Amino acid sequence: MKSYLMYFSILAVILIIISLIGGFVIVLASFLVLFEKCLFGRIAIIQGIEFTTISTILVVLAYGPAIGVLFCICISMILPAIINNMIGEKWVANKDFSVFSIGFGNVVDILCVFIIHFLRGFDIFWIMVVMLLFKHISGNIIGKFKETNFIVDYLGLIISVLFNLGAVFFFHSFWLSLL
Image 1 (cartoon, rainbow, N blue to C red):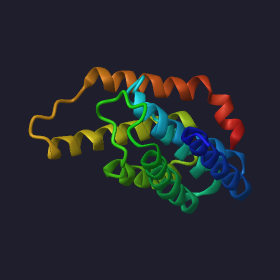
Image 2: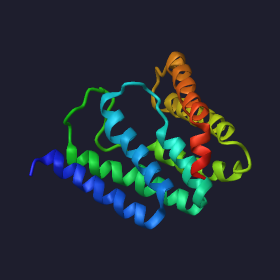
Image 3: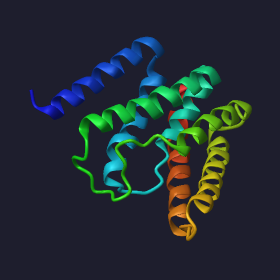
Image 4: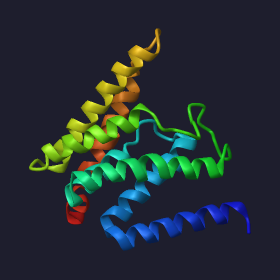
């Protein structure tokens, strides 16, 4: 069997198991996270696509903070690391891509679960605004501590915020129909 068919078969089996356990929201959220971390991370069409944040919002609003934390640990952190390690360095066009991508962003995602739970009475658009602000501010603060010559990419930040808020705004009724 060709190796890429084996990878997609494993992914399909994982998504089927998740659907039996959780339902459609968690399957869609898992697919979006794996799509972002295993495909978009390799090719970097648009920097700052936050399918993980949208997925985390959906999971926390639908299932609560405990499932949200498990989702961030298992689906957002461990599963993409396993899949990316199995695929290896194939099809990588992004110079910043790392096969093993567990780091500070995963801690921020887990913190976002509690913020989302706190903001659960608000509209999904405003929750996304707060999440983007929190993620970009924390990412820039950590960037300042990690690198001595860290420069904030304001253009990338604006494109990221506009793209992600546009995705939430234009698909607003779809996201709400899932909850």
